[in-house]
Length: 57
Image (cartoon, rainbow, N blue to C red; front, top):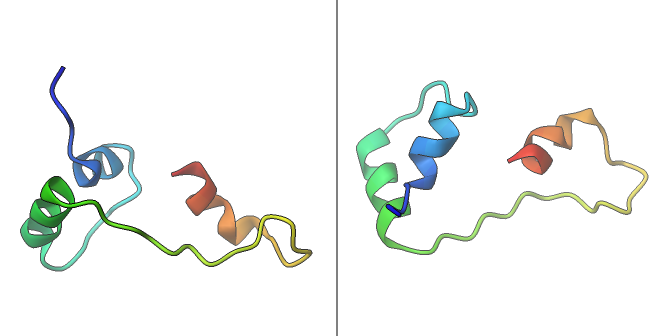
């Protein structure tokens, strides 16, 4: 089974509409392990619908 690039998967699912340096981002995500900080505490009272996109991804 071929390993898919996470950038391509997110774009296919409609999470990425447009971005700068698309080829460079695709290349980076295809060759390295990248960590993302999404910045919310799932136990906090401040969790709201705006955080839903990170949860869905």
